[in-house]
Length: 116
Length: 114
Image 1 (cartoon, each protein chain N blue to C red):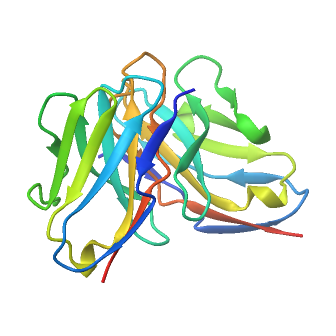
Image 2 (tube, one colour):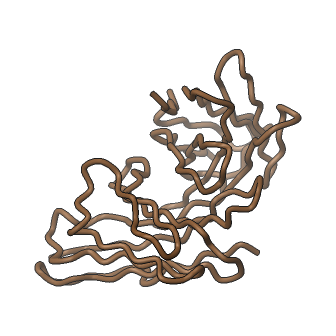
């Protein structure tokens, strides 16, 4: 149980395009979803926290207009990288939490984004 | 400030040898503690977690970790390492709600020699 699906797993696109990444909780309802960014050989940096039906909370230094997050349902959150540029190339990972007591967050398999 | 420190960036052990990965944390309240493993190009898999109770927790794949409040540590151990254990390991700390954000350590890369 507790499967989180992230799609696509890998995307390559031209500079200036927008890219949407989906994060789905397949067998539980996720009241909260998190989006992380990971640079090569580095740790995960939290970008934002999203709660279903409300605006995402962004971490300091993360451009909310650049990284649009939508959490429209209890099983789906999306991250849209708008007008992507090469410096946005990275590994993006989502996680989902049900809000149940003593249950950990569950992570997706990540999306490798490469901007040419 | 809340933080997690994994002092060892890279560790190499021989297959069959024992393993200990260190994790120290700084947190203002009683933390939830986690160890995750990441294979190249993959997401994170939860190895084990500590929420409360017995300070020695058992996880998957033969891993265990011990919470030591006095040392602010949560070290990961395995008595006999397998070649398939080679990966990146992350320690993380979070609040008492699973909808609170996690703070990750820098990660430790484990290499296993045949």
